[in-house]
Length: 330
Image 1 (spheres, rainbow, N blue to C red):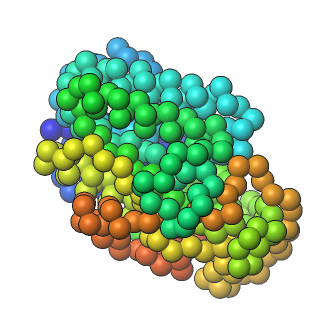
Image 2 (spheres, helix red, strand yellow):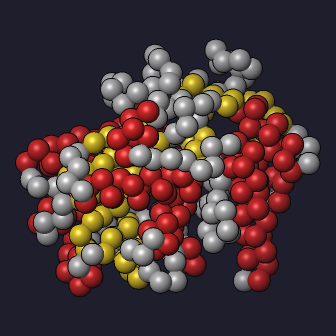
């Protein structure tokens, strides 16, 4: 049995590819390398450079490598960018996923894991938010992921394909042993931005709004370590292989930290003070978004190992330092 990991040269995809290989899986990565990196793919995995919408290519990969399951990460992920370029997001995240699913169904793939997002909830009335909360996305990014979940629901009802959709909250950190980490230029994730301030090239932190109805006026988020998220994909794959039916799970810890909390944690862990500029709110940002994660713990037996903000920050900073060293060598 082999697993196809789309977008497996990217941040979360590469961590999951490593996690799969660590437990003895045969891994094939399909990535167009637009935002991913060839060096992030495990040495023992097969990398195919191409697009998920290339149906003939996907069919060839499935047949050649004996693919029995697909873990789908490939797509665009920046909320403000999606507001500026909605057509691009509906193309990359929805239309191309439809093409991928068409091949998966035609080739009788039964196990499909989808990289979804908490952005499908929009601005929930109650936090922590459960999987039963209604779809209410406030950005094209969230809407594009919602549409894919709806496609998966309908396809699973009509075919033998079963899926798990994992709704990510704020993903951060890096591989604890330094094999991969978040490396995309101009990243917008808070902890990544802070790590770039500590190790260059950024000089200041911009905070988008301090007038939200939260304890300190800044947005509150549930931060999950990327290695714990990779493990969630592994246990989801086990669940589907064990004849599990289609399910949706939140991926977070059930605890929230404000933007200012995170900034202070970065300063504490790094020992570096840096300027913080408070600006206007950013369109598409809910005040608070925290995961109810009881379902994935109970049904899949998921047990996080890095559920600590200082640990997440420590690993992110270590990766940023290593990434700078890699850039100097290249």
